[in-house]
Image 1 (cartoon, rainbow, N blue to C red):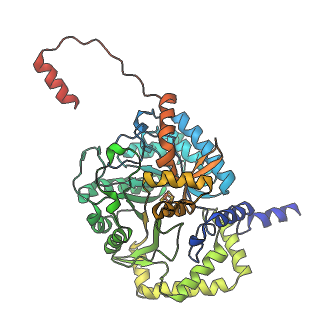
Image 2 (image 1 turned 120 degrees about the vertical axis):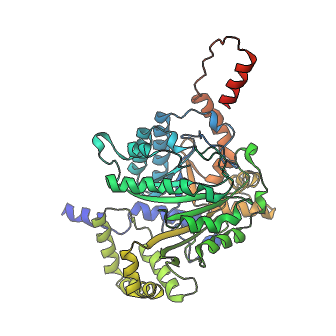
Length: 482
Ligand code: SF4
């Protein structure tokens, strides 16, 4: 009868380790975020990211969240894979068997494609759903070498990438200094087209997010970026108001002047809809706002409306009965688990049915929905705003948190509250810590990158004795190099 026990365990809607990790996360959360809409500790433990695995980048963005030393560290595939392994092992041990994790650092496409693929495979081995972060300035041949293994067989059924495109970036081939967001549209489209082509030619599915750093200079361009990007192939449009963090030489504007509500209003203007970010909250809403929904043709619809009591009741049932489900499980297993939830809570069927009927009614009826589906006009789209914090606030806030003290200064107190409710974590197996990404970039990155400069120095440039050049030749050579 052992097999019966195995089947029972495998089809349990939520694994015991997951349940324990969720409970731990919920208990750690400060009271102000333990709301009915909170997903941390109920649906997931939060998102994870790597650090110190490939700090170097070949762009010069303003701002850049990496410390001044990052570009003096050599990209080294063996180091990347070993570090990713250590960090993921720690995250899996502390935060349970499943999470979304970002392969992030400098520029991921500077990794050899085989090393990049190996890092993704390691992340999957630890139950992480990886997403690679890139400036997107690479060729289709790189993507193919990443996606296909020896013999041309796909290494993965699906790849997830976040492409960073905005006017704060310097160094894109053919567009080194964009002056408006619209100039970047051909690069955005080209990036998405590579993945469409990969799917058509090799059957590898994809999920693409678009990241835009928001500054006082480009905030007014958000609506147009959204209108331009919504049917390119992205399924998430994410906006990061800039913060004073990372390399101080790259700070250009008054980032403190960016108001969260004003930025969100711009995002709503681009979406052409109210974006109800309080239906599902991820951590502290001063850090993160997310609105989950879909485009049906030109119109964006939320998966649930914040002024509809029936939708909110459906949300509550979803979090209560389906929280912690591993949606990335093999389909048969997922179906078996959902069937057990339904058997234990049959009212879920009626709740789901009424929810679906409301969505169809909103979209103009069954005929309109079927027509949109046939034409491929139903595009899932999540809007996100993630507001990193300024290093000068994070440093004292983190020190106090570690001592178990609370600041009297309202600004530092807010920073402490947000750090305690953080949804984006990075692992330090050497100390046993898991820290918010804000702490990583504001407090830990400088020393970490300084150590990596020693460990992985850039190759020394060979100096070859030069013949003395006539003045005119020297001037021409300098111009060519620069
Ligand atoms: S604490 Fe920092 S990294 Fe964590 S969710 Fe808030 S802004 Fe993001």
